[in-house]
Length: 153
Image 1 (cartoon, rainbow, N blue to C red):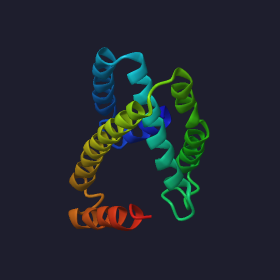
Image 2: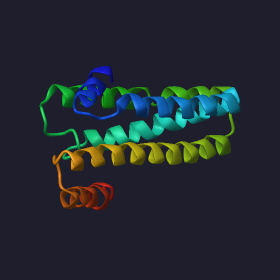
Image 3: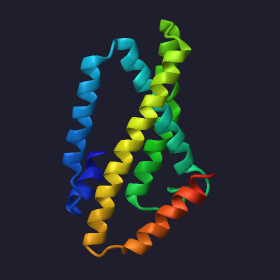
Image 4: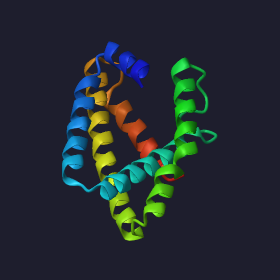
């Protein structure tokens, strides 16, 4: 993560700002939630990242064609996410945390992650457009393809 984030920083992305925002949000949640609720939320985050990783790794997925060092690192990271996804869920089951609670926090984690991803992508896209790396039209087309084609698979 650090090497990837350093590359983003060099390109002008405000990675540290985004990291602080996420940490602040997580600190607020930790202060309010029980340990079982925190574990449920962690399991939900792990599940969402594992599903996202599977999508990125599949043939024709986001990480399937490039041989760059960053892409190789992300492929490894995605495989690692998939491999350990079950750990927090197994722990929740062993602790007897009710299924309804796991579902509730899965929905909450999905909403939180969606908000964070969209917030960060908006910042990345704004910078790319401002620097002339991509036009607003190209960005709109790419977003449409991602949501309509890739999101439907």
